[in-house]
Length: 252
Image (cartoon, rainbow, N blue to C red; front, side, top):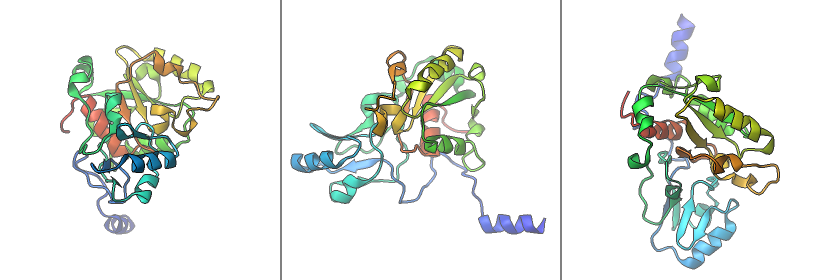
């Protein structure tokens, strides 16, 4: 018992009491801010520098569905681009993945959420996570979303072992060809109405692997996506807050 108390005193309180207002390190790479006076030439130089093709020039913007959050654009032009520690990045409209100069927040649009989602899943949402060629980074972060620190289970949000027990699927990875059939089978095993969530840059856009012949993203051409959760990998707070917004859950 003495050892337990000594460890508890040393570690302090690690449980996050309010996942809506939690503070993260200033070093966290979250929502980017683009200066309104960035020039076309600067944007072009940064677009050429971006390894993921996330920077567009006409109009100027950063696509968080492609961004790997390497911050190379910020390092090259710190007076025009800055990555904040705002982890609220999830959206349900793919057009909102693009951050333009002057944008101050990124949020789920409630009017575009399917009406049955908050009606049926506000108090209980079971998800099956599918690693479709992922590198295990997003998978580890999603696992952390259910640990004692973040504990998304307090909202009734949990990962389950079988798609037959799930209300939707969370896809990580660029969707490799050898996982495309397995993903389809998993999706069909989930009872309707099904939810589809893409977690991480690889899942949203294919990331650095989008041009690989080993990738087969045809699944996403057949079904609507309910939530896009950017990040490389996505942070537990980004995922949890995005899902809470999707099911219209305000508090615990």
